[in-house]
Image (cartoon, rainbow, N blue to C red; front, side, top):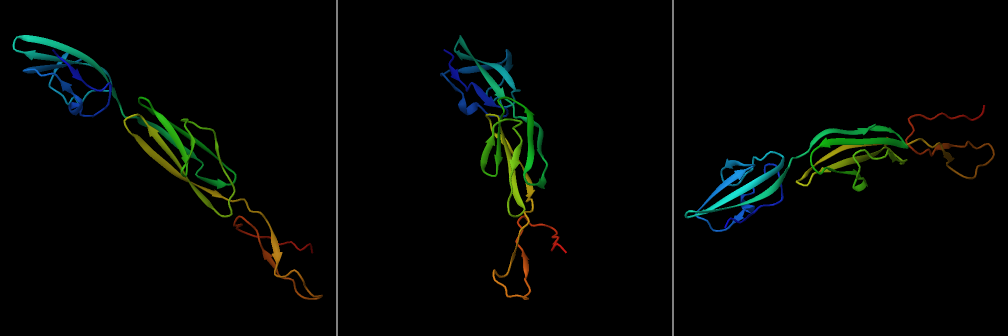
Length: 196
């Protein structure tokens, strides 16, 4: 009696010989999609569905068993985009990715936080900080047999918020008042206007 077991789905390039089990036979013959083949590992199967047949031979007696297997091909990443890579807060960042392959999944991360599972998520808005802030936008593309990690760094420049103060709250008449910049957001230049 021919009995063997293989997984229903394998990854392209996998050696399935460790997964093949069969009943005791003096000799076995193997066929893939009806064509004679050597024994497993079958690691060069093309992506898609295949019929694997084993013929067990004991003396003059023969029996065969057939199982189907789906070979999953690694994805081809055709596009990965994070745009723009820098700008002023509040910065709208457009994310997109595409690929070809079986059972693709997309997971977008802002630093370590999952923000979307779509290949083209909604625009991601990066907020105001006190200084230039960098974020890592990551994408994990999975396909059941592994995956690929991609990332880009986005820099957000804060909008300046003008503010100033003095070195004292109390001054005597005629005493010089010293003004100090207390602006937020790392402004490149300051323009003072004392109304004169």
